[in-house]
Image 1 (cartoon, helix red, strand yellow):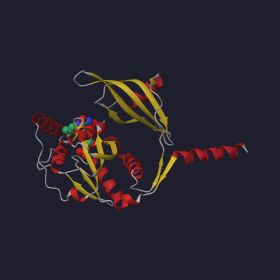
Image 2: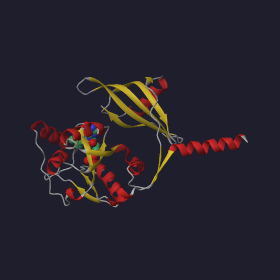
Image 3: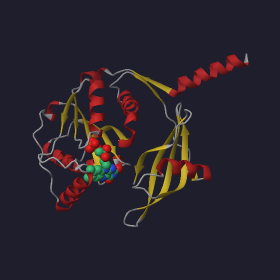
Image 4: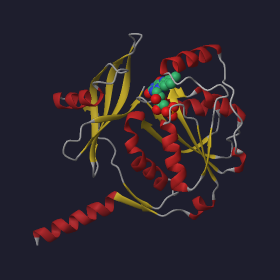
Length: 276
Ligand SMILES: Cc1cc2nc3c(=O)[nH]c(=O)nc-3n(C[C@H](O)[C@H](O)[C@H](O)COP(=O)(O)O)c2cc1C
């Protein structure tokens, strides 16, 4: 009897945790374009995954004068262009974004916001009246900051979804993109309902060890965790840390660091996003 009750409770718990979603008819009728800039291929991986899942059209944004392959050289050119307020010229797009209802707009994060070619793109196309889904790849983060910048650059932009993936964790793209597409009613499937993070508490030694294991060897962060909240999903324990970070200029700031640790044996904690 006890076993039966346990099974019943477990089934109820599972039912409560999933949110079945059918592809909405409305979504099926909409014309979808995946429009992306990618310098080294990470954002392109996400773009192509989404395009294939939706059978959408896809178009690549390209700078007229391509950025160098070398990271430091791209940083140097990008810095100069930013300081001088230069918007890099683009090659003409081979689609007309005006023909679409939904635009998946993808870019890498450069200097904490969307890459410079996207700045030019926003001046060349009209996103008003479109539903926009933002996706981005980055070394450590910048998704939410770039969305705030998009909202400044295109007042009234209608962003209906977002996805950000670290370039070191591209193997997470299928699961994360599927979750987004199901949430948007663009793909059939069931999403686990994720709990909110628990209230922030001062970190314990064990929390600090998890934080250090997740971010320890990342060169752009010099952070000490201060507080943490967590939640448990069917496959992982997720942590939301606040941390004190010393920037390259020595300035201290408070950052949020999202960390996840899979439940499978041998899974190590990894950070998935930094909000600065
Ligand atoms: C000029 C430049 C600036 C960058 N700035 C940041 C940054 O501020 N934050 C970050 O997390 N990653 C930064 N990155 C790393 C890229 O966002 C990351 O490598 C991204 O996945 C590249 O995408 P792609 O392969 O589609 O070009 C920068 C890369 C470049 C080339």
